[in-house]
Image (tube, rainbow over all chains, first blue to last red; front, side, top):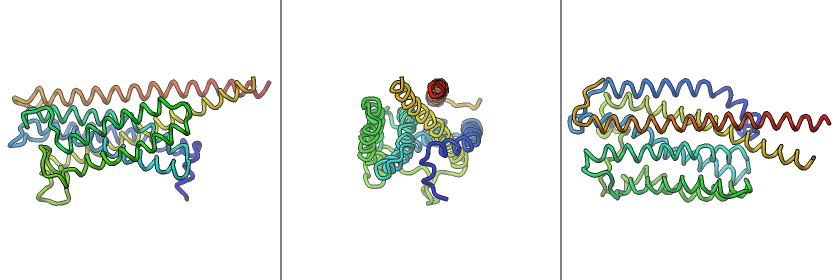
Length: 243
Length: 53
């Protein structure tokens, strides 16, 4: 079985229709249980008080914001190398989801930062690269809308995606090579000493899983929408030429 | 409802903003998807009737 057979829109849509019910249901369970557990059943942090509960929305949204761009990068590379239209449309479909998650990450970070750091915003390496990632999302979506020819739009947005990947990766890894900045290090780590306590970790992992499944469900559905729009335009052109 | 103490506004505000933005994303996604699929069905019918003529 080859993964490339899903470059065929009909096969992709058939697989998507089979996967989506499970993805939507699992996402709902993950988010409701993860956020409910984190909000209602976990204790306050001894230093951060109840603001620690923001972690269950801030970390998953930031996780999706960064990984959505990585997914778009992979899909863009597939488009540039193999010219599979479904991959270009999947990248386009993911961008608004990534944008909303980036906005959530920025807003919840500011709301959390104000009482803990005494400021809504700091020009910290991680925060700044995350803000630049937000601007790249805006530029990427605007470029898709601005270019009329879909193949040219896919080429240009793919190149923009390659450039923006630097900032997506920097948002994730800036803390490892820049010591200055207000933002803490990794929340989740394989290092027991660095990782957060189990009482916070378990609902957080569930919440991240829920957000990830929601991202998958949304991208599958939205890619189906993009395929439908593309096919509608192609059929309309054919009808006009035939008339 | 847990006692959120002096940070209640911040915590509830963060959750409120998140849930509102996610709801908007979901509604816009489903609305655009339904419209696109309905338009495709209509154009497919037109294309079929053109082919039969």
